[in-house]
Length: 124
Image (tube, rainbow, N blue to C red; front, side, top):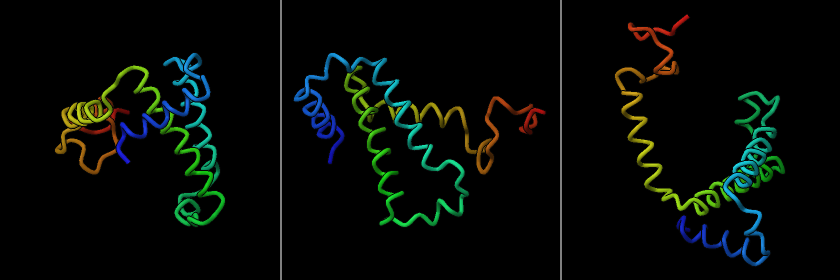
C-alpha cells in the first residue's frame, strides 16, 4: 500500500467520524507521543534476549503491532495536516544526517558528533 493511499484511508476514517475539528497538529503530536509511549511500555523491563524471543503469534507481538500502527497513523495524519511530503522529508533528513555523521567519523561508533573532542574521542 502506498503512503498516499494510507493517508487517504486515515482521512476517510477521520471524516466519517467528524473528528477533523479535533485533529490539530498540536493534538496529533500529543496523541503520537502517547502512542509511542504505549509502544515503549510493552518493552519495559524486558531484556534484549526476551525481546528477541517474542513469538510472532503471541499476544504481546499483536499488541506491539497495534501500538506501532497507532503511532504510524498519527505520524501520517500529522504529515497530512501540515502538508509534509513524507518521502522528500525523509530523503532531506537522510542527506542532512549523512553530512552530520560522515562514515569516517561515525562508522561503528555510537558517540554523537557534538560529544567528541578534536581527536574523535567522547568528551568526559
